[in-house]
Length: 251
Ligand SMILES: [Cu+2]
Image (cartoon, rainbow, N blue to C red; front, side):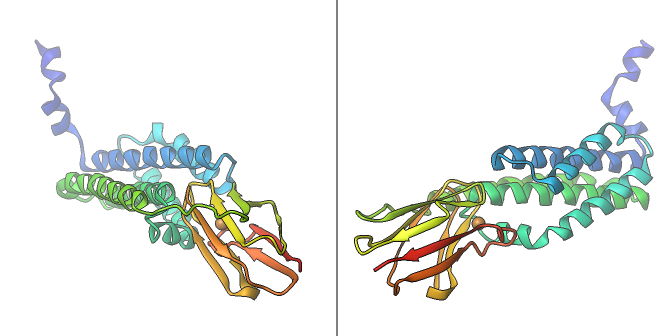
């Protein structure tokens, strides 16, 4: 009889202190951040050191996020906020381009995860009542679902562009242009850029005022009308500074 009474969920909820309830929100946010870091690295097919650190920190902390661990909750809130602010230019760029759905959805996930960690960590530290906990958790899930569905819809409505006969093909993949040296001669009418990454890129040739946006997993083309010479190709997305190439136009 007494065992059955102890196992009733209502009894467990009533016994939970506000601090441990908020710490539960931090744990949920930490798990979201582990999922974010894992999916980002798997889809990028490369190790991104800052993301690896974020994933390891939250993965290591998650089992300890219970009871009255206010210090750990606040520490993770500060760590999460600092990591988020440090990457803000990249995050804002991804969140303002929903047509590149994989990157948008991942940054939305990181935003929700950090939000839960920060709100939970600060609320636990301040011993706030839990009246707003459930609405906040539901709002986080709602924002993520609406944003994800919206981004998938926008991406589905974003056309890819087919290559024309004679186009020289350039692939943007794993933050690199391939080939790095793009040669155009008299027979070439233009360049077709195929983005195989889940993030957006641009094919930008500053000297020729060419700046082509290439959404994630889409293709775009550009006509080249330039005097013979050698021109630098860049991608102007924040964090893609290493993504360069050379356009060589021959007569
Ligand atoms: Cu790029």
